[in-house]
Image (tube, rainbow, N blue to C red; front, side, top):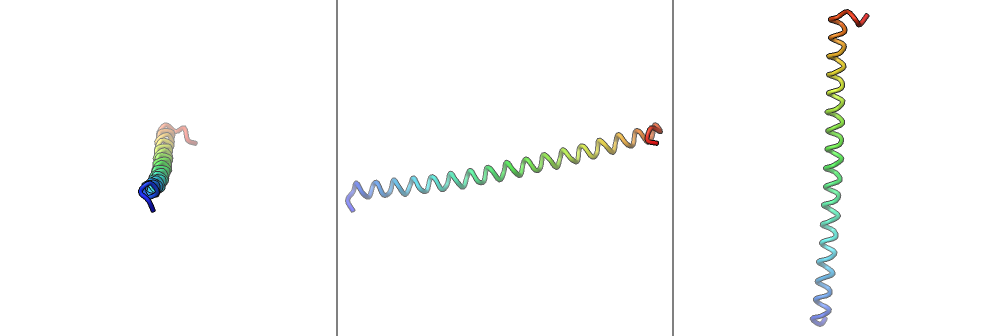
Length: 66
């Protein structure tokens, strides 16, 4: 293999490794985003449940829940 072929081969290897690393980083970013989305949804559901509980408590206190 001459110098030009060797340089091309090394460049091809570097490109392949960069593409693989990019793919791995994109997968990790996608997983992180999905996890954040799920966490936000769970937090929202908890807030909603607490608000509903507070509203029911106030209705009970005021006698409006009959």
